[in-house]
Image (tube, rainbow, N blue to C red):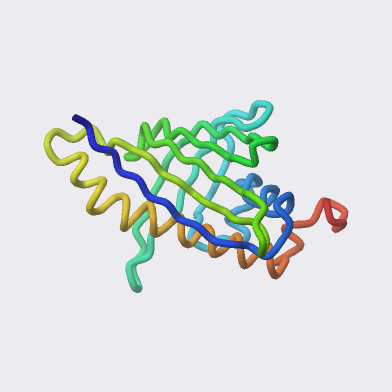
Amino acid sequence: MTTRMRTVDQTVIRAPVERVFRVASDVERWPDILSHYRWVRFLQRREGGGTVEMAAWRPFGPLRYPTWWVSEMTVDRRAREIRYRHVRGITQGMDVVWQILPGRAGAEVTIMHDWAGPAWPLVGALAADLVIGPIFIHGIAARTLAGIKRAVEHDERGFSRGPTGSEM
């Protein structure tokens, strides 16, 4: 029987769902508001997503560990979901779902990661459950949610506004 690593990170953002969804799905601009992201770039674009390469730092006190992955990204505005399927990097095969739903205090944002772990004989699932999931994946996802929350609630650099500065 294959065990799967699952992580769930959640926050409430005091802003309209549409604004939060716009910022969360505009991944190329993440390095502007998320200091732990080194870069994000589309390798291939298509309607509703594409192949996206992401690189982030996972801080450990004064040290920073570099991480990198490539995902197939799908933006589903109707379902208010952004989905990723990791296709390259140590997390290949991981499924990620962002759900951005209306709540009483604003947008309720949940990031769920689901993964069988790396294809390492004997230790792959253990490494995913004990190290990769709780330390790396949760560490980066929690920082990403906190940064998007800060950017949207404080409208850093007009990030949640349209090209003319007007609310979209």
